[in-house]
Length: 244
Length: 252
Image (tube, rainbow over all chains, first blue to last red; front, side, top):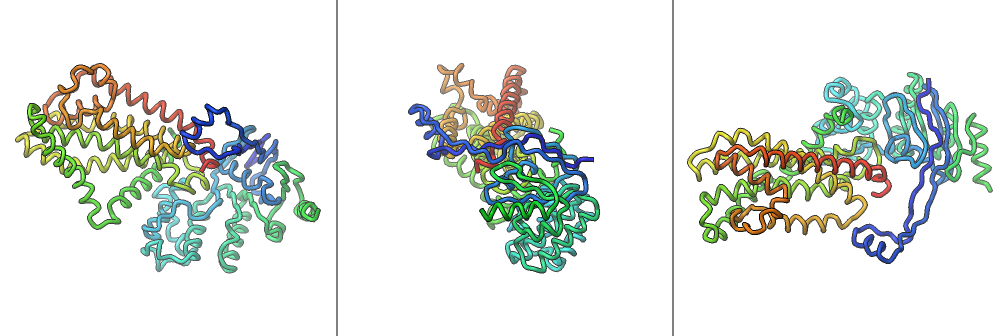
């Protein structure tokens, strides 16, 4: 059973020669006929298929299209061509703590953040204690978020996100923030997810981590797939590409 | 639509957060939000009282007009920022983005209902009695809601691409304020009547006054006008929003 099918995905960004952000400037540009822009294809005809339970690494240099691809999978970006089919509930970790309200308490924020991830009140109520326990923040549940340290903030966000029980997780560089202890905890949780048979898409520059947790790796360069397959081989290909 | 229902919890949360931010963070927040329309009404009352003395019960006339107007003006002015101001909710996670505007319109609707709590006793005291037709008022506001929501969707989407929409809209709102019968009687613009009635807000204000002051049920004609205006506003607004939202994340 495929969890994610990506067919001929392309994404084009338009970069105007002179940035016009107002109606007024656009009206002037129209009159002067200067509506020129540069086209930039961040992704071109990308195809791949993920089976349920895979942990899929995406590597590539900066600007190779990794984050654009993840954005499309997360339905934040809209592809200019192609089709994405996703089977299952998706949690995207492009950023942790999206929608956190500093003026509200940790408890209130747990409910808000999980509703952003598509949970209703009753479902959140069931996992509420687990979230606080995993984040080690039980004592602070009634504290306003603005008084949290950045470490506490991250722990709360990560803990809430992983407890919403997604089928598919899209993980960007987010896990590279936080201290070693927190990183370790995140990695353990990801391993847990793997064992439960969930699908994970993992974009990273941390090649060691990719090697350790992924079942397959894909190398992107200039918006195209260079290779997909066994970790070691793809990573070596990436290293030789960078060496050029 | 089905999808938006699935996210009803988020709609509720965002609306509550908006209301909390509006009222909680200033000690007198809630009081001020009730006082400011009253003060405006008071100023207009003393300025125009003699000029428009032919209008019976001018105070009530002003209050209902202002309250109806404020829902439209405040909602749409805030809606301009409803998408751009939400940052990572647009660029970092998937949610049906119409929710961002919906929670803005809903929270302003609730604010308007709070205003009613103070306006209704005043209406009672200046006119001596309240017509039974006032009970139909929520129904009209429900129709009005879709009109305001549609306009809000359009403005919020446009602002992502054109960052002077806020300034343009502020000017337009000011012009509309004078083009709507808020502080002057309808009788003063007799000559331009057909053109003047093209403004749907006028129709809403007239219906609200009829219900809340004069005890008259709206005619079928004016009801159909507001219904058509609301449906059109919502359909056009959501169509444009859905087309433009594809590139929201990259334009922010």
